[in-house]
Amino acid sequence: MKLFFTALIMTLVSFNMYAEDTLSVQKSSMQMVYYDAAEFPLLGKAIKDSRPLYSRLPDSLKNKIRPALWNLSQNTAGLSIRFRSNSTRIGAKWEVRLNNSMNHMTATGVKGLDLYCLKDGKWRFVNSGRPTGKQNDAVIIANMEAKEREYMLYLPLYDGIVSLSIGIDSLAEISQPKIQKSYRNKPIAFYGTSILEGGCASRPGMASTNIISRLLNRETINLGFSGNAFLDLEIAEVLGQVDASIYVLDFIPNASVSQIRERTIPFYRIIRKQHPDVPIIFVEDPVFTHAVFDQKIAQEVADKNKALGYIYRVLKEEGETHIFMILSKNMLGTDGEATVDGIHFTDVGFMRYVNLLYPILEGILK
Image (cartoon, rainbow, N blue to C red; front, side):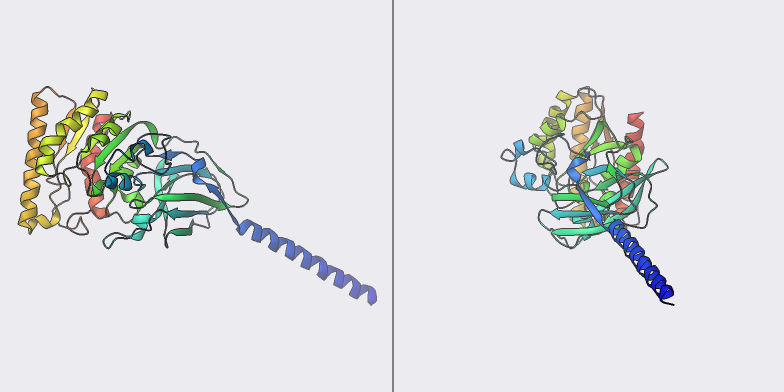
């Protein structure tokens, strides 16, 4: 009988030790380890390898341009991180510069992250990293099959990044991307306003330049500056340094009629001097949804578009052949549902904008 109880106790002890070991392994597999996002490719910078890392303009311009422009350039609109992992979960820790918030745009769009995965050759939305403040820690997706996938992580539209790390299972691997999507040679360079920067997309992946990048499998450069697209010549110099396939100039919502008349051609000439044969596209002012009721806005839109049309005709008459004009008549549809405040686009507005530009861009690239 003693032998029986001794054997039983030893069995129970052994089972308990096995259970503890199993639990230990489970706890280990549940842990996440984090990797500095700076170790992976960063897409969307006008001047590659410039500093600060998460800046849309190089620090050499900090004391040469208007302070408002520099501050806005620290917003990470259009920037994204590419990586590959076999983890069952993807998380992120990130600190934003200012902890910005706005009353007409989601926190996810302002300072959140957006994860996409390459599935069947196309980018598929996975989930968002929802911000909680200046310091953020989120599991973006969990419960996936443990197999290698290609990922793209979009950065905030209306705040900057101080630090960013990507989290994966402790037993998983993370590596450089193996598939070249988006294609990094000859990006499409965009210049414009708050709308171009991404206001007011619900999440970063829905900004127009990010949508276009996925559709065309081509890197895009977002030089949208909220309320500050005044045709500063320093920005034209930056655009001129981009070896772009196309330049899209969508500054009319910010520029006044006098600025359009006085600055458009000098701005254009700086880019054209560096890139004699690259297509340059001008985009008209949107017919904002509230212009149906606000007569002042309606007249302002008409006057600005008339001024841009005149500049376009002058350039054509001077023999410029690689220029295009996108008219805004049907840009936002006719139902009035494309904006959050009459001006800034909702996701519906961005999709309609993209649907207008995409066929033209695709046709030029062929």
